[in-house]
Length: 99
Image (cartoon, rainbow, N blue to C red):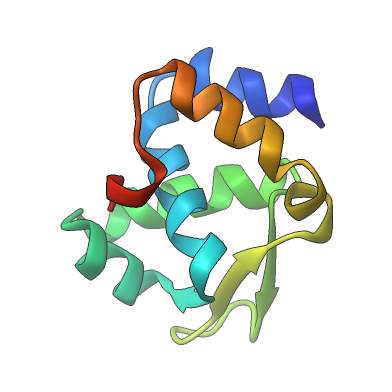
C-alpha cells in the first residue's frame, strides 16, 4: 500500500488533487458533488480522481453507481494514513489547509 500511495501522490499527474481528496475524506464521508464544491474543482475532474483512488483500493463507497454515492477512506488507507501524511508534508502541504 505504501508504494501505491507514493506513486499516486508523487509519481503521477493529479497527485496533488488526489491528496486533497484523501485529506478531505479523512474528516468525513462525502459525495462527489460535495467534494467538488468544497475543493472548488470541476465535478468531472473529481469523479476521475475518485475512480483512480477506488481502483487502487483507497476508497470505500456506499450506494455505488448512484448520484449521491458517499465516498470514504478504506480501512487499509486509514491504517497507512500516517505514511500519507509523511509524504504530504514532504511535498510542503499542510494537512489542515489542503482543502
